[in-house]
Length: 336
Image (cartoon, rainbow, N blue to C red; front, side, top):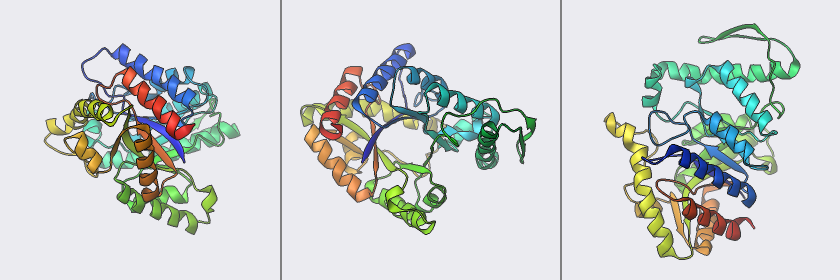
């Protein structure tokens, strides 16, 4: 099994420059520790995400790492003009020497879309159309041909495509998946998936993915990455890990729900309980000593049927020292 990192890059009222530097220091540690990828969320108008332009932060991350793969998880496609995003992706893939992972999606929050003047029906149309235009742009850049595209929302006429990605034909694609039937399309197209559900619900997704992968002629040995995320805190003792996790989860959860609470609504398909202890009981968090964390990850991975596990080491008000200790202890018990 491979390991990666997922980060909302959430913040409270602290200094933003210090927050960015803290995460970049952690990226250096993830790189040295042997994690496969760093996946960065995109959010707007909320302190859940201090990287509303993921490409800016990932460009800095590319300069602070050598082997670690980097990518948004996900680019919220309705908020981008596809040509602009195409060019940004090509730049990042070249700047990182072919280390970009391309997460695409609609975005979990329709509230954030409305701040951009994008209502739900238009967001759905943009989400379906944008990947097709970007893929056509990749092909044009590699072939050296002009880009022409006719869609309901975007039309492009004989545009020279002067940038191309370092990876051929394009960076690996990633999707967030919460429902089993949503795993069929990525399986048929060889797209990696990540889920945030409890292990039992993830298993329903991964089983459906494998079924669709095999039905499409895919060999089991070549299956793409099917993963899940967890809040992870590792310390020398269980009490130390739980103290950090309980404290840090409170501001993280408050940030997650802040926009929803403001608008009197709730996210669809995902929920987080009020306390970290309840999050552990729900199977969506792990905290403890290195041996205990390793054992729990192994059990959950087998139950969920995954081959890729993503850790949230930095969340809420976790300090650099606390996150760094989690990473170091995790490396010793799970990677080395």
